[in-house]
Length: 115
Image (cartoon, rainbow, N blue to C red; front, side):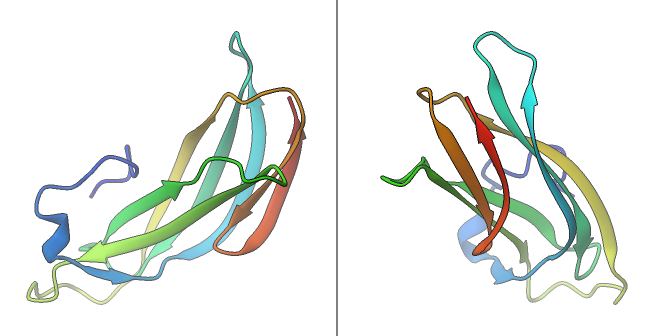
């Protein structure tokens, strides 16, 4: 499973089928780096152990909204046990110009921070 780096491409990704994930908790935090970076912690479940966690972070828009798309990919031809696969990951959202930013995960606001 690709939980440790859900933003990196998966070999053969274009042949996989996109599916949802179940997010139980999301939390925005400021990482103690220089310059300061924003982080996003996600806890939830994938539909099965055969799903790969995927995350796409878009740069801030004109209103300083950072859109994060969280989903999974699966090989539709693979036979897999039908149980939820828990995941927990922390993402680096990046460093941006001074200002207040809102973070949205799958269309819902999950946090706000000032840099």
